Picture 1 (cartoon, helix red, strand yellow):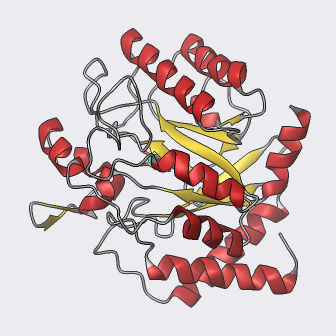
Picture 2 (picture 1 turned 30 degrees about the vertical axis):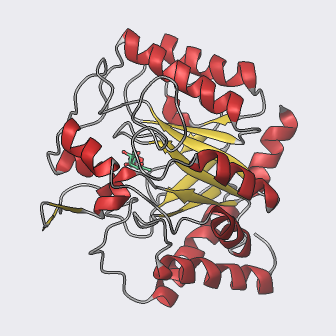
Picture 3 (picture 1 turned 120 degrees about the vertical axis):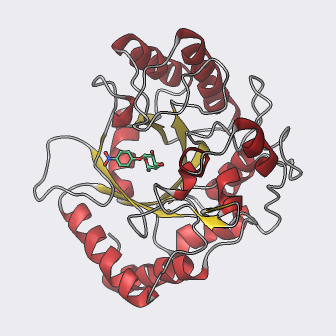
Length: 311
Ligand code: JFZ
């Protein structure tokens, strides 16, 4: 376990990926931009019903998704691991789950296990692999309905469902370097049980602080936030390319990728110099392709790291 902690700490710089059925909409519902909220949460902010959103998933067919080139991109960007949204708030999972039919195999024409393939491709490049898992679920029938703050408690049946799905992730995809729990308001008991489920199968998996109740192995800062000093704990700064969204937004004004690369590089240096890990996000399109702008930002940072020594 100590070795796993040291390894995680030495990662410094990793890739975050927000990808799911929402990517298909790219921030547009009924031909209109949903301006409020993150685009990965369009199911909530666009007032999309469960049935309508399942329709969206039935058109999610990311034929241009190439796990090998994503892993190579992360490697060339100088990143040491990849963390992908196995399941976001919408409840759609990118892996096959026994406990719901709202997953990549049962609910889409694509029918390939994205988590499995990406885990393999990532390790092939010598990088670590981690998963994001939302503790709230807008599809699961026994979960509380969508709320404006995403921090509702988790009913017992939903908690059991989460435990089951986490067990799948921890047993079917090889070594998981970190599990990024997010949102909801678990009780101390629930946080403990989730952590125990993770560690029972993989003692070396680090658990994100957003499991709450002091059960996390590392602290997660706010989006693009980093402290101005060294802390006595393991910590990470997750960063979106733009503050407005993590998931793909077709109408995002992106500007100059070289300027963005310089901005993110300064952040990376600040985070790493204060002892943190930097998790920089990309949001692939619904067809699975990588946005050119994001690719250029990543490769520009990677070139700088190559020339100026690894982070
Ligand atoms: C959460 C999600 O709701 C969001 O969709 C995205 O996945 C992001 C990475 O995580 O949003 C948060 C949660 C907490 C903070 C910021 C965004 N925070 O503490 O600043």
